[in-house]
Amino acid sequence: MQELMAQCHCRYTSVNTYDIEPRYHDFHSRWGSTSGGDLASIGVFGPKGDVLQIDIHDLLDSSGLVAGCPCQPWAANGLHHGRADERSELFDLMVAWIVELSYRGLLLFVCLENSVRARHHMQIQQKFLEVTVPFFEFDMMTVQLSATLPHRRERLWLRGMRVDTLLGKPMPPPLWDLPKVKLVDLLQPDLENVDPTMLSTQKKRLSFWNYVKQIESHLSSGQAERGATAVMELDRAHTSVFGIVLIFDMIPTIRVRGPDYFLLSTEDLHLPWYRKRICRYLAENERFALQGHPVEAFNAMSGKTIARKATGNAYAVPMLAQVLLPMLNQIALSAVDIEKALSLEALDMLVSRKMLLSRESL
Image 1 (cartoon, one colour):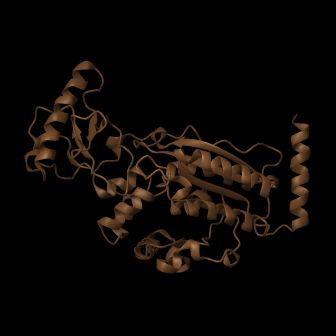
Image 2 (cartoon, rainbow, N blue to C red):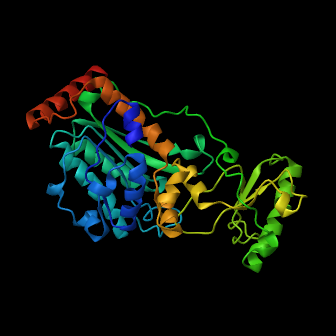
Image 3 (tube, helix red, strand yellow):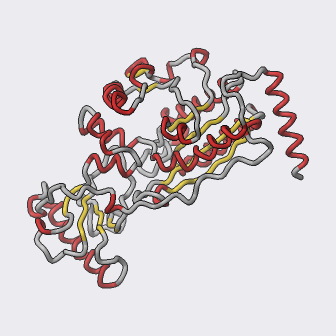
């Protein structure tokens, strides 16, 4: 966020930062000492970081709200309980925060992110916000991370901007033309390969050789290019259509739980494992790069478990940049005083202006 704000010549200070995971405090403390971050000093971590227990009136004023709520109530690998899943309360709570902060007169922009399978729920919340916060404009869009990084991750974003920042224009579209990064450029070339005969279980060893046959078939049929990097899950049932995970030059969705992804170069299948370009699992710090975060951030984590949790739940930086940068740039162009709170009367005038512009556009 600090870097994104700086690109739009905006000053960034974190407020209202909470997390129930206490180990993230250690990360922000270590990472902040080298990156200029301040979350460790102003954030609330551990049991007191449970946002469901925060009194909404205790929130500090802010000009923006960016939040990613748990996707498990709707995600494909979740329980699919939707609103019946208690974790869905967090999304509703963020909507309540938006209403509270917007009427204080300082809030200028919001971004909420979740699974694309939460579309129906997010559409309901968008309509609620359009009625309760009429001096904002809202929209919703799907963003594919694979457009910029070799990582299959699709997310739904609900955005909002106060109407005086728009200067009579519609919401700025996201950035769709960011440069695309190749998988090979994100992988570390100096990591040791793994002997397939030494994989931890018989099932994994059997799956490996069956996947090699499938790769050879894909190459001979032209479905894959020789020289691509094959990505597979070795503990998937290779004989099951549902269970097969084999793609090329692309990483499936990075998750908190689930099997590790195995990488295999295709131009040297005939060579022994130790001479191949790559024949190993995806490294933990490479997971950071595939979410758009610096690989060095892994070194600030207190262990592999918390690092995996962080990358599985993390914002993908290119997605956030695509969605948020045009909004920040528009706010900078509007020259709105981000430190001056508007009165309720001034907010009502924004509603009248919005209605007038809407009639003029008909």
